[in-house]
Image (cartoon, rainbow over all chains, first blue to last red):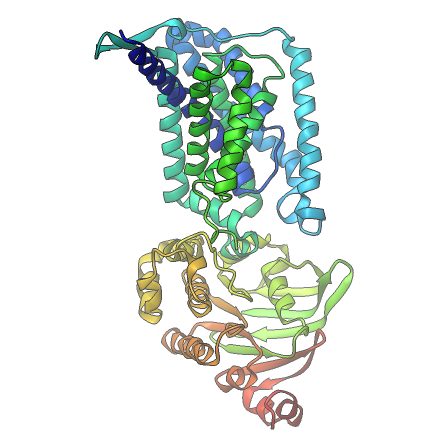
Length: 318
Length: 235
């Protein structure tokens, strides 16, 4: 193989890796988008909801996932089982805490309650991080599946080029895509989805329509939590994690949501996908320590050129 | 259908409405007129449950409305077309109408209602897939009215449907409302600053000033009243 073909091979390999990790980032961002983008709640604990999703998946896997579904399918089954658990968790957090600083109660608060949300969710983040530290310990854990170190080989093509496609990441990416498409259909097509959008668009008018706005916000918050947690569970099958892992991802999530255009669910997905691709491609030329820096240079570039993000529409929320 | 007795309401501790009593009978068209800041919109918001009551009572079809949570009131058959239209700007026109049909009655009669709404307001049919936020003020007002009708209401409350519209468009909206009223006999409660129009077809009218009902009676009666003629009709 010539030098240029080796380069081409590594670029293709990075693109494949970027698409797969990007699909999971996209899912993560879609979860935040329904909380931050749609409901306009600033949630700094989103990364820690994800961390919790990872641990719930881990324990579901250890407790029964491995026996019931086998060690190959177990981690994915565990992540899916963690999703409704985390929906209930998000629902309850909203009911007990978040609802005090959002929705109808936030009118009259400074900055529509955003300051209060910031402090409250930072507090929740700290409690979750340190609580996880006490309960689960500081050591790294991972949900290992034999698929994590198995790959399909594509090729050889050209002059002996070959790509290897990690099985665990492929399955995780497929699950991500299925969930995103279903969520998108729910939001666009069903009465529930439309009422969530209406409640986000104009809470007062929604009450005149007979929509229970507080309930709509709880459902959206629960959905957002569950989706990000599912992304966490899927990541857990590939990456080891610890109680403070949320910090690494919450920044990626906000960057993805803003990149895609605040308020747009498909936008959030493409934002996350972009970050995955940039991260993997930058690793070709830059040392891994600079991966996150590259993401933000790229982020600043896009936001400078297109402040509304990829899918942002200015007509929305006038 | 709607009975309001000695009703007091306002924001925080400041009462905006003082001792307001008002009746809307089945199939009647009632107009409430009065200057800015008289509390007309506050009265509507109190009926819809957005503004908390301080004293008095509101009954709808004999039921104590103040005990019904705000989001349940639409389901009883009260449609509120709010001041400033308040359409869902990021939803399409048809989705706005679907949200109007969020009530059980609205869902049950969706097809028939939609057909009638499109007959009265054909522009909504043309624009059905357009985002409501991209429509003109007059078109948005028609979306707001259509959305109200889509709930199959027993009582349609309209808060200044002519606000912010060019006079010709306001006339058009008003004519449409009268056409809908003629076709359906729907009970209407209208708040309006265009007093002449508001009283022209109404069965009864109320004059609200600084949160009190200062005058009430049949529209003929009000139109003949010297104070109304001087203050509102410019005669």
